[in-house]
Image 1: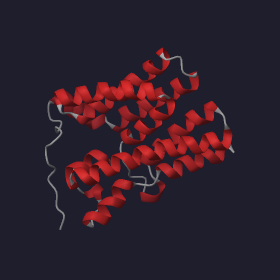
Image 2: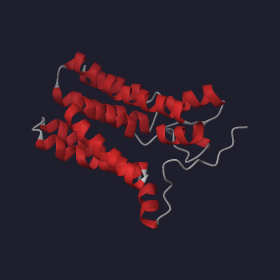
Image 3: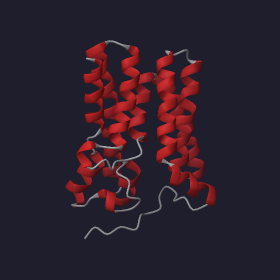
Image 4: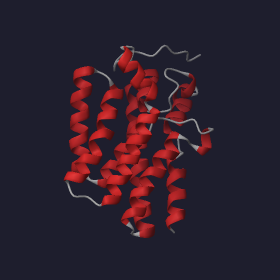
Length: 200
């Protein structure tokens, strides 16, 4: 049941709402526009606030749903924590969409909420403050994944949650490699800057 729950978590993560909503709303492959990323931030830049917020919420729900399903199937805290990794992996490398997905931050938010609502709140507030000051969504995203392991530790959460959150942070840093380079070189795009797009 544990292995089945992880497979199902990966498959849930592989549902690319950014791709599906962009196809429905504008008839485009979101991965061919803007940053080429199938995620909430690129959807926001290319299609606007409504679709961007919808993708953010739906991607977060994937994380909660996968972990909730694993809890119901196994009742094992370690399996529950690892399911968070699988759902994020599915989002990042979706089997249904040629393994070309997003960067996993919205889904990570759902997973973190499953770990600890208080840890989620602390990380979210810190990220919002960073984004409000710098207007760099990528920097706020990296703040979230960096803060979470320490927050879970201070809140005395299960060790499996802490190890899983460290792995999630590694996922995020790998997926944000280009963003990190752009931040260091001063070329990172800020929130509110429209993407050059072709919707024809």
